[in-house]
Length: 347
Image (cartoon, rainbow, N blue to C red; front, top):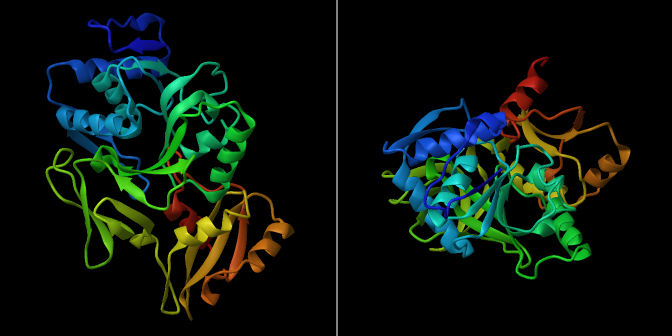
C-alpha cells in the first residue's frame, strides 16, 4: 500500500485493505480530522503500558525536527514497518504528512524488508528487524534504529553487509534516543558510515543532568513540562551526550555500582546471542551479578566471557545462565523485570 501525502486530497478505500493497513488508515483519518489531539500507547518497557493524549501540533513539531535533521524533502519515499499502536509507528506517518512524503506501508514483522526490491529514502526499524534485514538495508538511504540499543555485533554486521552490497553512497544509519513522552526521539547517533560515540540532540532541545546524574530534557515544542528521566548520561557539551544506562537497572553488588548496559555492549562484541546482565538477590552481596544468555548452553561463549578483559574485577559475572528465550515487551524490547522474576521465582 502506498499513500502520497503530496496529493492535495487523500482518499482511502478500506474494503481492500489488510487489518494493519486499516489501522494505519484509521490513524491517518484521525490525525487529519479537526480534533487537536490523538491517543498514544507507551511500550511498557519500563512499567505498565499507559495511554497518553498528545497534541497533534507537537507531533508535527517533532516530525519537522527529524525531517530537517535528515534532510528529507517533499516526494521522498518513506517506509512504515512498525506497529501503528505505538509512537514509533505513528510518528513515521506524521513525518510523511508533515514533509509530504510518499509512504509505503508494510505489515510489521521481524523481516520487514524480505520482499523489498526498490530504493527507499527513509525508514525506521528496531534492532531485531535490522538484524533480519541485513541483505536488504542497502535499499534504505536514511535508516533510524530505535526501540532498543544497537549492539556492537549488529554495528559490525551492518558495515559488513553494506560493504558487500552496492549501496547508496549517501546512505546513513542512526541509533535513536527517545521515548513516548518526547514523541519519539530527541537525539540521533550516527553508526554508519561515520560512527559517533555521542548522541546529537535535535534543534529546539536542551539537556542537563540532575543530582543523580540522570538526563533532564527541555523540549517546549514537544512537551510543556521538563522531563526528568532515569537515564544516566555523560554530557559532552550542550548538543551531545552519551547514554550510560538506566538508574533503575544499576546493580549494587557488595557496594559497587554496576551499569549492565555497558557490560552488555562489551560482551556483544564477541557473543552474537542476545544477553542481559542482572542483579539477583544475594545475602552477602545484596545483589549478585549474573549474565543471562539466550540459547543453548555453549562452552565457547563461557570461555569468551571468562577470558574477557573487564574494566573492574567485580564486572565478571558470578554466574552464567542460559535460557531458551529472553522475554520481551509487545514492541520487542527486553523485559528485564519479567526475566528477573522468572529467574528468582524459585529462590
